[in-house]
Image 1 (cartoon, rainbow, N blue to C red):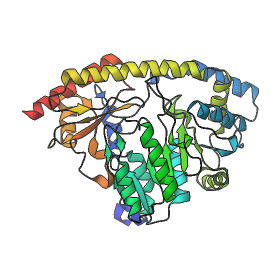
Image 2: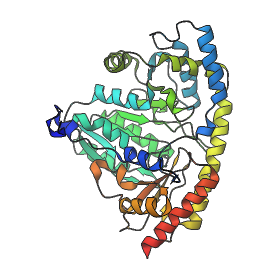
Image 3: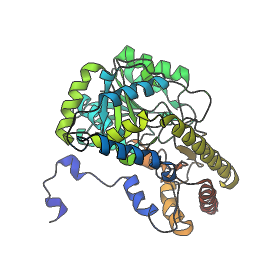
Image 4: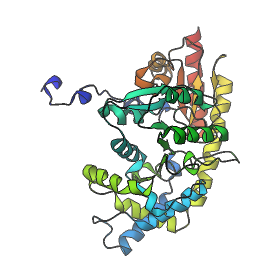
Length: 397
């Protein structure tokens, strides 16, 4: 059947593979050094602890493989985790999801009318834009800076003009793709704007537990529980295949989330919830997080040192205090999308072009790229950056 004859909704006809989907095909080719995707380090997965927890669950819980309600004790553990992030909440405000991506999707389904406006940074996680596609939302893009984050003057200007977006989507820590974390004053001002203009914030904190500096700031949700809806995940701190995340919302919203979720997948993966609960009960998480932060800090620093050694003059980049990414800006006029095919063909090295993260495919980040440091061991990071540097130097002539 010709694709034009498929009975698709108009928004579905416009769908195209994302840059991340395309990149998955490239990085699996033999010999490719990838700094592209936001993958955690597989060798750091707590496999022994997870195996012990899975065996315990199967041996001791006869109903573990049956449909079941979400687990109250796991929500209580998440309340304790949130307290370590500086957030006070109750188990009744925690809703368990199949990963953070589902949490984002469910919140958007509840909050967004078709054609309504939403506020986004002009450098934004591409997966969130995919969530918006069915709604034909008007995207209000506000400037964000690689060094400081979201431009709050732009946010205030948009709101003062009379716009009332359904919500603002943002990351306050380990920003994807910029890698930055907001300063205290910026967090306070952003939450005050949300409160004053009655604009909800969807706060994506997928990377909030991966922090590498002594001073760790609490997320936006710590400053307001009415207007900030928090999304968290075990994917980056335990293992993505477990597919367990959570949202923290006002308690009256939980019933509505449950109703919407039931229509999409009936039941959360409660078996993996039980495995995570057993792992948390064992007390292994804190030690695992300490090892993870130590290793990722080493990999971050390795990447930054390699960039100093190999990137051409005129390039600049961030030093992230959390997360998995470094954002690199080349001199204006460079085209990292065009350079990617050359990098793969000549040096077998991969990255994600900045254009993949602009709102509605804009060109304002055509000279930028996002590099991941969590997935490769330090020696591979050094080799990957050396290869990337040769591509960029050759492109400058």
